Length: 176
Image (cartoon, rainbow, N blue to C red; front, side):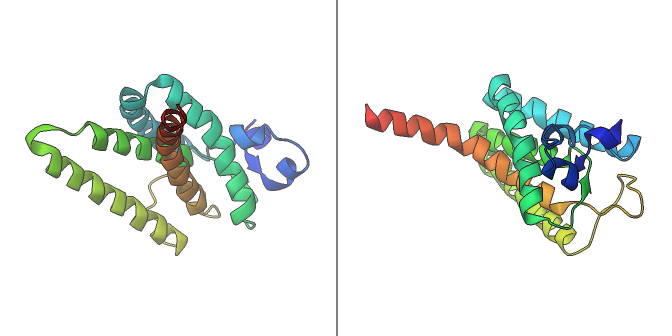
């Protein structure tokens, strides 16, 4: 079943467009799925508190094909992809932005400094993966490489999900 749902470059290019979404639902192992699920669940709950369920669900529904199409365009050597880590990064960026906006009181500077350090850590992680380093722990088969491009595209999608509705609101107010 996973083979029918995974991101398969050639199958997508042959018209199997459902794979743009479903490739994020299948994984290489139970441990891989649990890591992605746990990360996405925690980040998703935090993001939902900040932005509401409709916006988070819309970000996921649009983020999945954005990441997949991005893989088609910027990762020509990526023939197959399975996993929700790109979507988990999308949710983590939304969660971080929500926490940044909600920080108040005496601890604003400390909370924002911690969030900035986490953003730097994410950027360093993606850069390390792009250079062939991986933290491991997801029980990927030996012939499967981490798709750092999916993480980068997920971060980009998360930033768009946070910024775009705010930008649209500003444009509407200016026009009135």
